[in-house]
Length: 421
Ligand SMILES: Cc1cc2nc3c(=O)[nH]c(=O)nc-3n(C[C@H](O)[C@H](O)[C@H](O)COP(=O)(O)OP(=O)(O)OC[C@H]3O[C@@H](n4cnc5c(N)ncnc54)[C@H](O)[C@@H]3O)c2cc1C
Image 1: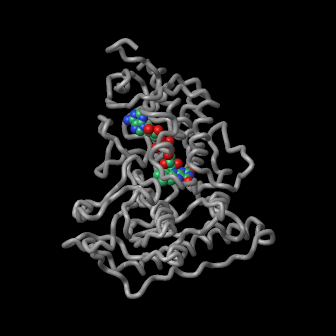
Image 2: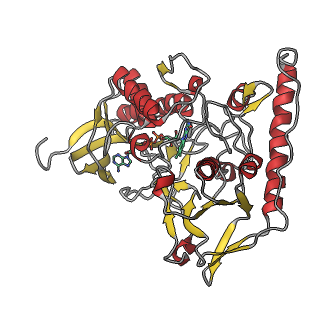
Image 3: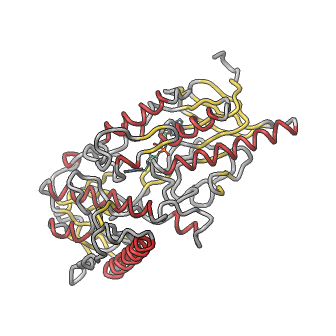
């Protein structure tokens, strides 16, 4: 590429994870000229930002992308990280995606006729842009983390690889969603004394009435619920991930399972004063709420099973033991006496748009969009939680989202061209 000359294309897709690749496939089907720019390699997040023992929490049969799906011998199993990388890399080859790897987008800005995409490896001018750079690029850590005494190591899930990543001593894992419960489980089993700080969480059994919970949620329509069907989409987009893990034993990773292993539960980490961690007294309420919501989900599943005539072929409905909450509650923990050697912040993730020079971010740093159509003409986003459907941030969610968004993008391009813009 000649210096200073921007390459012209209809669409630039930023990011070659499964989201960007699914978009690429749908754009190719519509003969829309495009390039996928990737700062590293295809499936970079799975190669570099996950811990060693992680497996998908979604079953293999749920690994479906436009024109491609899991075809192995273990549809009910859960992929390891190398298997996910192979699956996504295989997809890129299968669809002959026009990916340019080793190309970091450094700035996206508006021009008179679309967008200018600057990178460390050339520049593009395009009519439309697809942000597929991921929802979970950076750890979301509370501001009071800076008050952690220097004698205590801190680490984020993106940095954590295995129990050896942490110095000796007890570990305070903060956050009890999928990431927090999985890492707490691994550390406790490795002989660490784990304290798990629990705020709002979503409880889920791995298996219910003989079938995987993901099967029930998909079949009953929960995962396919659309963004314009829920009462409060902003709230729905912020709901934490379900406490699930994909293990060969199909184990349930709820708080009772962790307590049985020896993990100590405390409430939400509220702050640090004089080197002392302070925990909210709301643990019981949070657990009761999670139990209640699990009950509602199972009611919905049971009703659907009855309506669908499945009651004769599946075991009968049942309910799980309520979450056992320690009494009395532990409201504080001395971080200076050596009992806690490290803190792992499993407090969520956020996207990184430090390179986006278009006024589309809300006050919290998230892109303003309506079902993936960004608040800037010709810009689209994929891979965000509940983008168009509850399953949008899952691999499986990209299938329908990419098809919908590619159709919207194509309409936008056609209209623009028919107006002679
Ligand atoms: C810990 C964890 C576990 C998960 N488990 C599951 C699971 O079990 N099942 C499931 O279905 N989903 C799971 N997900 C959710 C989801 O599938 C992943 O987050 C997935 O990686 C999202 O795909 P994506 O294509 O939207 O983004 P990513 O895979 O993050 O891809 C974005 C790509 O954009 C590139 N990029 C970013 N910025 C730039 C830039 N400026 N220039 C160029 N390239 C850039 C990145 O290098 C990356 O390759 C999990 C997520 C996390 C964090």
